[in-house]
Length: 151
Image (tube, rainbow, N blue to C red; front, side, top):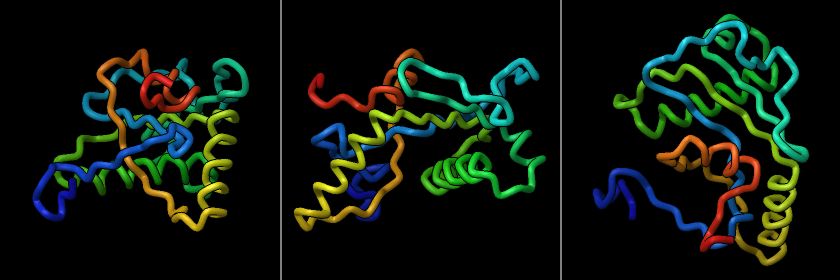
């Protein structure tokens, strides 16, 4: 579907191979939970989840207080901007962005991108959002990649 043609609320994309997508950012929005100093922070070492998977939590408060051009601030701003671009005036306040790095997922994605380039297929990246009603799925999706047809 295409929202430009008035058919759907959001543009829809079909992914036939999980290697075509690289889930990296989790945008937390709406009511802001207590974000004390005990929580993870991009200024501290990343949390490790399994083999070669790291996650950094970036809070709006920290990013707004930091005027650097650090990769962490850039990641936060990219995810924030995409969320607001997609939802426009209906977007809720973003309070946290989690940035996941999975070496295995990244390698599969880069190999698929190279395969597309070699076959003459477009390799332009598109930012999309995927929702899940179960927060327990988030770490698994970002650590292992999306599943298509159970694989």
